[in-house]
Amino acid sequence: MTQTEEFSALGLTDRTLEAIRSKGFETPSPIQRLTIPALLDTEKTNDIIAQAQTGTGKTAAFGLPILERLRPLKGATQALILVPTRELALQVTEELLSLNGRSKLSISAIYGGASMSEQLRRLSKGVDVVVGTPGRILDHLHRGTLDIRELQYLILDEADEMLNMGFYKDVRHIIEMMKARKALSMFSATISREVMDIGWLY
Ligand code: AMP
Image 1 (cartoon, rainbow, N blue to C red):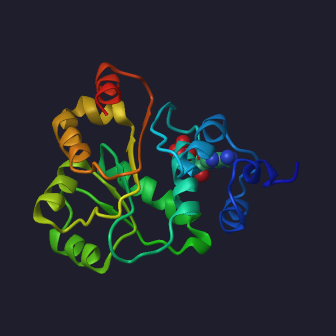
Image 2 (image 1 turned 135 degrees about the horizontal axis):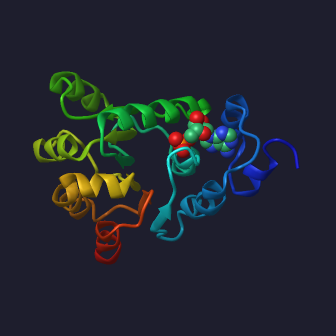
């Protein structure tokens, strides 16, 4: 197979393959092979619990299907990726931007400790994909400044770390507010008690 044929066999099309080519990815990683087809299938509700360490290509595993499926709305947010720390929010945002290619989605990191007015300005212009930390996301949901009426993807990244860091209640609260979402997926280095709890509950 040529460089991107294996990615195309997973269901990704030219717009996304171009970005994969420019990143220099040659073959999908194991986690990508397993999760990309499921996340691309929007006919079904595919909720996923994936065990994957950092460095296994997990960001592209959930990022590529999101970039493939969504079209820019510049209004309501269509994908929300919850992460435990500001550093990870920035890292995931950077990786998604580098894969964005022709999708032209607006992608933004929204985390605690950063300027609220700047985040309000960005959100009011419309952000298609938000990568955020639970506390600040909940804050925006309560203020009504994060519009989730069009939400399709809710991803919990490094779920074990996030749930162990005391965000358990916040994360549950956020999931409860997003009943209309199409898919809830968790990516986690370990399948901890808290990760299983969320799995059973939702
Ligand atoms: P992550 O596990 O998401 O933190 O990714 C670790 C690194 O692997 C990042 O620099 C990615 O750009 C890179 N990467 C992700 N998928 C692939 C792939 N299929 N082939 C080569 N590198 C990849």
